[in-house]
Length: 173
Length: 307
Image (cartoon, rainbow over the protein chains, first blue to last red):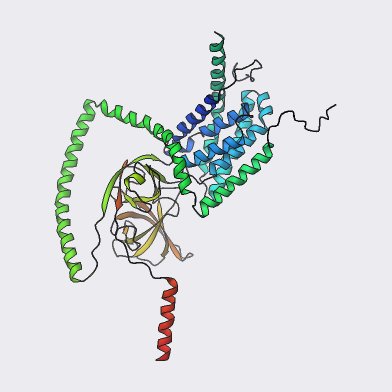
């Protein structure tokens, strides 16, 4: 499995353009906005959280806690949740990503996935905690979403890595 | 020599992650508190929704396109289905038309009787057809978003129903969208009457299931399975007489003062795409002030004592 043991490539990668980051976040908001219903809604991975965590881990100097908070506010508006509910969760997520980014970058994807699961679980727990404080109840199947999000970590990393790689190749030729 | 324990910074990267975390977490908590307690931020929300709504609109496109493609490729079997559906609908329309005529006669009669009894006439309500754009993408909530907003004069508090019964209430209005809270939302209350005997009560949403419950029903209350609950109309928000729910289970436990009554909504709360918004409901007379009512009562007592 060449991909699973893939470390972040030591070779110099072409810098990610801001447009690429913005587009990926918009695409994540779009995916979150698809009409998910019933069991699919419960199993829906949080694409925005995934993408934000990816960028916080790989570009901690450009995508950090402040930007994640702002994206969280947008997610709050899109989901009609309380102002600050997603923002608080994504703030913690970004903090996890930024603080652990050196360690996570040393790991291969399998080890990363385990660490990432912890961060997602924390994020989901904060969201559910806020809901519990405000509305006095918790929907436990909600936490299944953090499992599916974690499962998507490997495909997402490979996809973004490949996209970055391709840009380098195109540039060379 | 640079001391390795001392953090020596060549580049200024602003405040440390911990400082940022604390700052933004406190900001979020503050916003949460303000939004949950006071609801001051609705205008900010509708302003930001203009930013997000293109993405939301894009997100509804795939399913809309899929539906259109589905409509386009109508095969032989579905055509037969359509013909059958058409027949059914026209049959139903005929039977409904007869009932409608009867209803109009009854309405006239009711109006005359109310005139005779000098009761105010119940206003007719007009309705507005809307389409559900999407269900709320939040496991914790029972809400849907519909395709008309402030531009179509939708207002907060208006009642939403389908062809069978009450579905919910408008709780938030955006420029081009509005949000409907379904009656199954946790703690959403609808004042109702039991159709069979006119018993007044309030039905609450259960939240995590699509059920409703009656909370403050005495154990001895006259309520049975399959009783239909209709809106009582005494709140001035819901028009009277619209079906809301049907009782499916009653648990009478002598240990508790109240019976545990479970109901299911009559309307297809989670099903349909098209809904009706009811507008121009009757204005009820203002509720008297608690204080002035108390003062009145005091005066009356004094007058009685004086006599």
